[in-house]
Length: 170
Image (cartoon, rainbow, N blue to C red):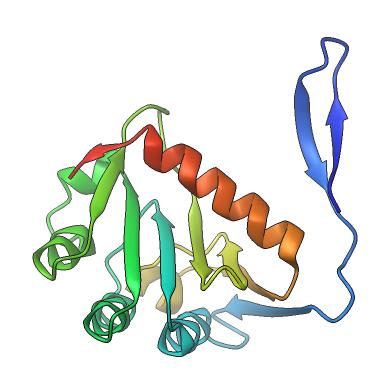
């Protein structure tokens, strides 16, 4: 269960949570540890009903292919990208939109720097890992796949919906 920290004005500053019993927290660290890209593709391949994505940068062909295949097998896929992706030459946003996947642009903040996927309202991937080839092969990045922590999944899903409502069509 989340507890909200509030400042003197009663404004939420942060959320905190204890590890949920029975949940799993799987980590990836690239370039020296387990592949974040493989972890993400595997989670997408296991998704059966709904996949929510927030991406600052999204150019990874293997991840985009897995997302398109999920859509083809009937998964409800929705994607939010940063406004930089609207003018990026090699973005997966165009590929995904052309595959029939709803893609929107989060234009309100200066940078929509989220790197999040929510799988079937059961699991969340988050971390510094952008969904790019460079993140997998050249950068020092981290990610975490959280399964079964309902409070965490709900918090990320709620934030995704808030950002989606404030976004514009791609």
